[in-house]
Image 1 (cartoon, protein in one colour):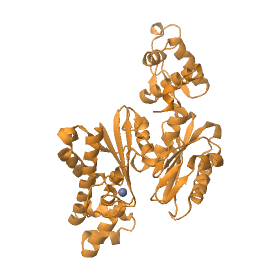
Image 2 (cartoon, protein in one colour; image 1 turned 45 degrees about the horizontal axis):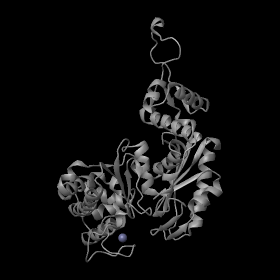
Image 3 (cartoon, helix red, strand yellow; image 1 turned 60 degrees about the vertical axis):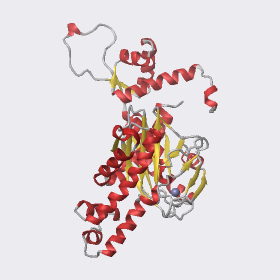
Image 4 (cartoon, helix red, strand yellow; image 1 turned 45 degrees about the vertical axis):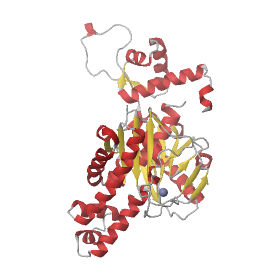
Length: 413
Ligand SMILES: [Zn+2]
């Protein structure tokens, strides 16, 4: 049971709540008149007029320009009937996506659109403090280069790898980085002197898609991200579902091979991420290339140094290397099986795929959807939509910035 259930509310919170209804309505609808806002929020016209007036004064909302000039005689008397809209560049957020061996930092506006961004690689054997120092430096550089005043920055959202405690915002465990109990929020907040919110990076992506992307208005959704590991962010009734101890969605450790599976970093064997993830695809492709050094895959790996190793493998599969194609097909089958289990358990309306699954969407999507349709119980697989993320490679950093936008602006409760 959460303590929140018994919390009362005071008049300031009511106002904050109403303000958030206005902000979210405008985020989703673009532009609305005061009358439309009042109807939507079930509030009086006076309350809405006051709220909108305050937000216009703060520069957060603006009156729509009158597009068509009506004949004077038809113009309504009194208050203008034009709509109001959010001013996207009136406030900003910083997003920090921590991946395995790289982090991205971006400054976004209120629509979660990137104003400026940076990518940095780091050595995964470095201690967490050193990586955090690099992140802090990058945040400072991005803010000063953008020329945006600090008072216009709502805060920093951090999407971290592995388990994050929802209350203390401590990164409890990131096995792929060997991080244990890293106090991310406290360290970054003290250094940059802005409010900081931290969540698991895939939870952040799911929140990003829910407020700013393909999952807007979707009640139940799973965002499944694959790279070094595989994780999922579950959205239930428009909110992240964390489970009792924040571990819901650890789909990468769904055991798919009971016997004879490869050992996983988690200590078990046969987990999903030992069957489909970037390291396993690289390893299997290298085996194919070694066995068949004159094949298209080996040739592409040698010749296309302009691409990442994973993109060279995807390119060879796309260009007709049968073995590479078959290997990816088989990886996609395991992902499809895991998603089918997820569908049976959670029955989401939408599954969004990110990371390597979006990068190779033309190779993954069809066999994944086929497997989900064939194996989910009672036709449930027919109903779920499976699509690539609408954010492409930006999913991580946009999700992280979305955390700050949601927690410090759109939904501060
Ligand atoms: Zn595992």
